[in-house]
Image (cartoon, rainbow, N blue to C red; front, top):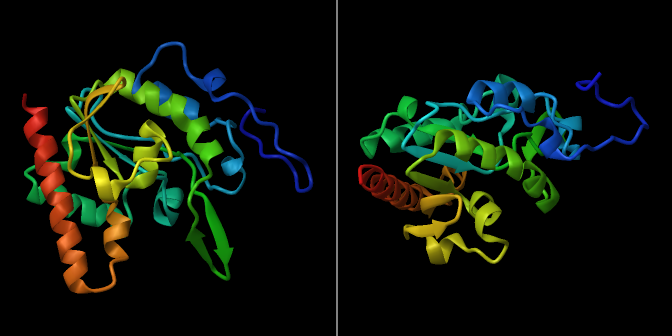
Amino acid sequence: MAGRKPSRGQSPTLVPTESFLPEKLSIPALQEAATACRGCPLYLKATQTVFGEGPARAAIMLVGEQPGDREDLAGKPFVGPAGQLLDQALAEAGLERGRVYVTNAVKHFNFEPRGKFRLHKRPPATSIKACMPWLEAELKVVKPAVVVLLGATAAQAFFGAQFRITRERGKVLKHELAAVMIATLHPSAILRAPDDAAREASRALLVADLKLAARHAKH
């Protein structure tokens, strides 16, 4: 069975991600096909694949890093604390969550067990590369006018490891996969800010970048 995980002690059999893509691309078809993905080892520990969701012709696509603990359990992107902050920032920018497409560069939760908790662990470059066909397929279906890259991992998935949010945040970037890309802070990074003042300043930057995305989406 394609969906079975190897028994303890067995090595996982990885299969090129492209082989899981459906013949006819649509968001429902991609969501279903991704549940069986074995393109990288992250599927071994994760509860389930967390695929993107939103309108199939959204003007704006938001790309984060990977699902977190809440998302892994719920099977939906951005439903935890970072998702709540994102929803508030979208509203402040005059955007509705239900009218944007939200996804992640990596579709499985990568974590480190710590007692009863599962601590977020940055996904390896191999997993980011393995997940790229899913992201490219989402872009082909949705055809967004603007792609907002939330955090370094999402930005580096498109622009390489040398990309720095601190240098490129808030700029209008060009890429072969989208006419306009805008890199900004990931909501989880804002939540980790050292104090209220820093958190509010970072949040204001996110809202400003979302407003920039909204303006370009109307062009």
